[in-house]
Every structure is written in structure tokens, then in C-alpha cells.
Length: 478
Image (cartoon, rainbow, N blue to C red):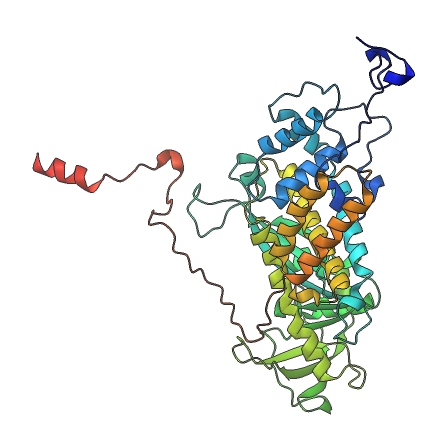
């Protein structure tokens, strides 16, 4: 029996029962981490787009959760979305098949995902000088390096990206080459370029030159220290700090002396044009280039190389002493660890999307997830007054995922409780510090032994199992 009397106001007619708000609970457990870091306009649906069961924001968060939880399937993402709708009044009927979710993921454009990645990197750049106060350089510091990732073995990927020539046809995976520009102060990924592994890193690096701004300082290994690179960057008023290329003679007895093992050297323009330059680009470069060559010593007991020969257009020894340049280049190794965080911790080394278009979107999702975790690490470093380099990326990732689930259980109206739990998450991340290991060796090797299975030397449909030993013995006895 229902009544509308004031005394029994709680038991009113169902026709007049107030409808509970749609957003009484968060949209997704990762929304609390992205709310203050990603511009809401970047994930807003199109005004002319019809209302969908998989809206852009919900699809974005579910895809991001797949990246943060390595190995998560599309079925798991669909189950999360179904659980969200079941918590709302009058839940719609949602199919358990993953086709609709995959179509919703594909509606995101690569340019939109790149805009989100750049937005996160810009948020990190605001605190660069505070996070890296040990180096007295107020100019933007950037570092470049390349890597490769594996694609699923599908016909579309094989046509676009061939496998390694060292493997038999049909026995490997398509390889995609990446070149990335990172911020040396914060570790954020600023720009990237990709192509089949047959494309050189210098050609991909040249595609990223328009992203540089006047006043930048770029660091790289000896692969990028060519005449064309240094001369082209100088035209853009960008300074570089590279290790001397192995094909050049490291003779520091010639040129104007600036200090011990520190000289001004004049390079002549090579007669042979590199393959990644067009003829007009090569002809526009100057005939000579004055650079500074110096030899620095890295003070590490077990380092792979103790003495480095560097080349740079920073020719003022008073403003840029050799000790400062050596400290800058010693930090270049951080990019190897940042690529490891993306490829190993976020498991981007083997991608899962089946089409080339979705592969680029999957790459951007990994880069967004990486920049998001780096931004949380920066907030923890500033809050806890700890060095950013000492914070564990894996520890920050685990804490962010678990605390976001706890924050998700608190209704949105309890903002103070959600804020206290968020601050506790930052304190937990700041307390999980990696111990200082200045002389720790990090060889590129594997400790865990693989299983004793033979490698695939033929395509799967042509390969048969070798007869077992007991079968061979039985045949010989008969």
C-alpha cells in the first residue's frame, strides 16, 4: 500500500518516485585518475553523434584499463561496462559479444589520441625544472632513441611490415620500428614516429624535426650525430649533444683549444648525400660546420664505457663546461629505462590488434598510459619531496590501479573522502623508492631459461611434431 501523506513521505506512489541520478557512481574506476589530468573536451562526444551504449569516454577508459592491466582481454572490458550499466536504474540489454566494443574503439581517431598524449606531456613539462633541480639548465632538454615492437602475424601486417630477414618466411612476426622524443627532465613521451623495421632510425628521426622549437637541447647516441643532423638542427636554432659517430676519427689534437681534451673543430660537408635527405635539403645545408669536440669521463665503477667523445654546437666553455655536458649525457641512459617501462612493464613489446589502423591506436593508448603514470609519479614526487628518478614505475602503476578501484567505490558527492584517499595514494607511491644503485650493472641478458622446445623453422601448417623416442624404439623393434 502506498500513500503520499506527509507522515509517510518515504512510501509514496511509484509514479511519483524520484529517479536516482545517473552518475551517482563514477563512470569507470580510472575516471578519478583522468578527471584532473585529461581535458574533458578531448573525450567529449560529437554533438551530431547519436547516443550509444559505448560512448567515447567509457570506451576510452575501458581501453586504457586494458593497457594498464597487461593481458586484459576485450571480454573483460565488456564485462566491466556491463557491470557499470547494471549499477544504474533501468539498465539496457548489453550483448556479451566483443564486436560492438571493438567497433567503438575503432571510432576513436589516431589524431584524437595523439592530442591526449600531448596534453599529458604538456602538463608534465610545467614541473620539469622543479623535478630535476640537480642540473642548472633551464632550457628544454630532450632525448631521442629508437626501438622495435612485434605485431600479430596477420596478412595485413605482413604486407605492411615484413619480418626479420634472419628468420625463415612464415616463422617470425612483423616488426615495427619506433623513434621517440622524451623529455629528459620528466621522462614524458613528447613525440614519436613509426614505420616498418626496414626504415632507418634517422629517416624516422627526420620526421620529428618539425616538433622541435628554438632553444631546445637534444641528446642522442652516436647514430644521430651526423653532419646533416647537426647542421639541420642548427638551422632550427636547436642545439644537440651527441656521442661522436664511429666513422669519424676522434682526433682532439686539432682545432682551437678550449681546455683539456676540448677543441673547436670545423667539419666539411660530405660529398655523399645521405639517403634520408632530398637533393634540395642537402644543397641548402652550409658547406662547413663548427662544432665542439670534447672527451669526458663517466665516473662509474662497472660502466660499459668510461671515456666518451662528445660533439655539440654548444661552443662556450664558460657557459657549458665539460663537466656539465658530461653529466647531461650520462643522463641520456634514462631513455633506455623509459622504453623498458613502456615495452616491458606495460607489455607493448607484442601488440594485439589485428589491423594496421588499430595498431597505431593501440600504440597511442600505451603512450597515454605511460604519460599518465609519469604524471602521477610527478605529483607524488612533488607532494612527498622525493626525487622523481627514485620512484618505481611499476609500483606507481600498481598503486594507481588499486587505489582507483577503492576511490571508485566512494560516491562522487563525498569529495573529501575521495580526496583523502587520493593523497594517501600519492604518499604510498612516494614511499616506494628504488634504492640508489649508482654502480649497478644492467646487462642485456635473461636469467630465466626458456622451455626446451625447438624454434619454428617452417610455417605452422607445414610443421609436424618429431616422433617421440618411445615411438622410434617401438618401430625399430617391430
